[in-house]
Length: 345
Image (cartoon, rainbow, N blue to C red; front, side, top):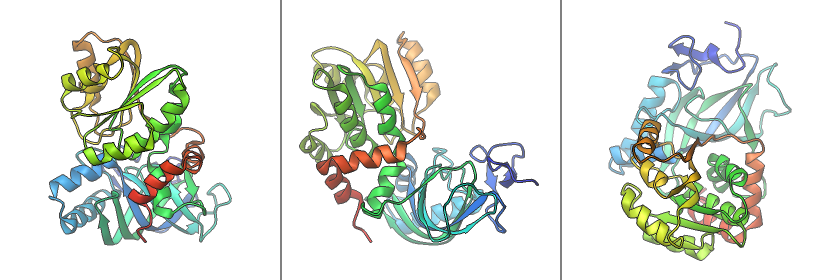
């Protein structure tokens, strides 16, 4: 089959599907002309998927490793069958097809910026599962299509820190497009990886007249967020309890609803906690892979909310450089990411 720019030549079932929607991909060699072969070092599993695997395995690293190996063996890619999501990877280029675009060369250390849910992947071994970072060290190879985007890892930032940030780079870049000066912004899951970045960017864009309120589940992480000064106020609440979130969040916003709510929570059933506190003229931005868009659409209908709802797109032009630049500019933010995700090698 002639290689397709979008990788349909790697789809085994069902034929005609694109790689992300496919149930099984061909992850074998030889490499096609329009592909890049990457020897994989680390998988950064997306938060919703990692959390689901972790809960299913009871925090047992061995069982988690076995589950990841099984998913990849069955699907030819890492696509969680429950959440449908994947993550990204980091590794070194080992071979470049003659028709693959750009100046990337064998030996370059890169992070893919397309989901593992569409990336052909073959694992030889899982070396370590890092519960604290959602990262998994492996030996194996992955294949990137010519339409796939990637970034060379920066030399001035810790490798694992950069990988963690690049996994969610689309979120703060899109916040920059959504938030206007003077806006009130609510962030659910504010103390997580993408949440912290979104809070910091929202505060910058909302300016002195704006207000950013973060909702956290974990007390210790909430204290870290307060110390970072990324939010005007941080509240502790369970995003699966929409009325509780509604009352606490609006109270933190002088009794008013918000212009924008950003949902980056990594567990299901948080849709209404994001919709209820938003103005009729406002916007709800779902960046969480645990979101049920049926629940969001029907729930909004049920309460008569005409708020605009957006699906978080992991890709925004320039998002990798944008997010890494945000980390470089803010020492406290960089230190927090380093303490959580970096320095593990």
